Image (cartoon, rainbow, N blue to C red; front, side, top):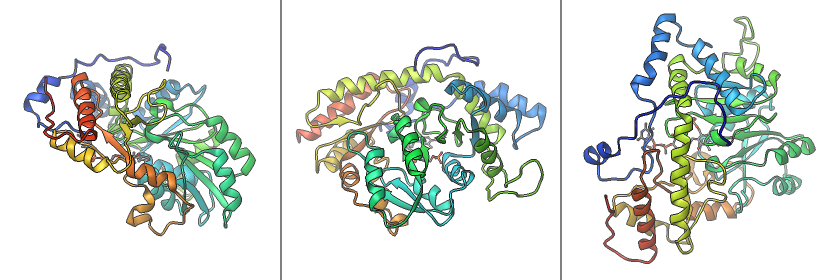
Length: 398
Ligand code: T4K
């Protein structure tokens, strides 16, 4: 994202207190250590809430947040509705676009459990299809081919941005035009790559995400009529009266969560710079490793709040155990694919060879805003040692 004048005040955060973390903290290098705005930055917003005594139901801070997010993302008019989290945001988006209940919704199995849970909660049948190994995301041409072989009609499709990577919006808009299948974007981790589109983008503001509110999310879309229905679907189906006109939920964001999100947004330029730096360190470090690669197009003009690597086959357990012995936590952010999880074992699916491969080889490495270069070096060295089967690896704490 190019440097631009921001339509909201930018707060300066104190330098990260890494020394405090290292002295008081556990020797474990956490896989993620969220850093949300400190109390002092929240106070002005909390005082506003106290004064107004307005705590939820489209309060002033929620309205301000939606306005600032719309402008930040480049919408020419109002383009954002906040939600209680991204999981319910996705369910609400499916409901508001009137995808017929009981119909099939295609989605990748290579995603977090939230995606199929949200699809089911909207009354649809989640049907897993495979991702493209070149992007770790669905590919519109491959899905078009898959559609020809589907035994049942498909009414919707959820494209998932893998760990914040950009997806090809134009190609998906064309896919929607050609197939009549309604396309939704699970952009939970993709705050940095969300752009105005008539396809609904659903972004998470969970504490572990790159822009955090504790819990929260938003739906971004250029279709104002759809957004009106989203607003109603987040609020019991009410449209100007207390009559429930639409199938709906309560998925509204509270003023308190909007306060945290506003403070986070004000600090976004600094947060983004930190992630650019961390991703550059990882890029340099991982490029020195044999047979290990970062996720496709990692950090090419975008930032993520997580770092995942593709390891050589059958080495992941050894690598994660070696890192753990060195005091470095890792995580399988998306497990071995949703189709292997008990809650989704009965979901219909196409063949999923790429998902099975990624599910067996991808490992999430530590990544958080106050990470230092020596932390990244320690992680990379540990991976290197694990792969060269050396023992007695100790993390260097400078
Ligand atoms: N779609 C996709 C593709 C998603 O990845 C997600 C969420 C969603 C939809 C749904 O978005 P939301 O409905 O959540 O808005 C985490 C997050 O809870 C989840 O938001 C995220 N994806 C998923 C990939 O990961 P856990 O269960 O792995 O998080 P947890 O609690 O183990 O924390 C991870 C690390 O962070 C640990 O080292 C502990 C540390 N941590 C965590 C929290 C919450 C802290 O130090 N402080 C904290 O406050 O799910």
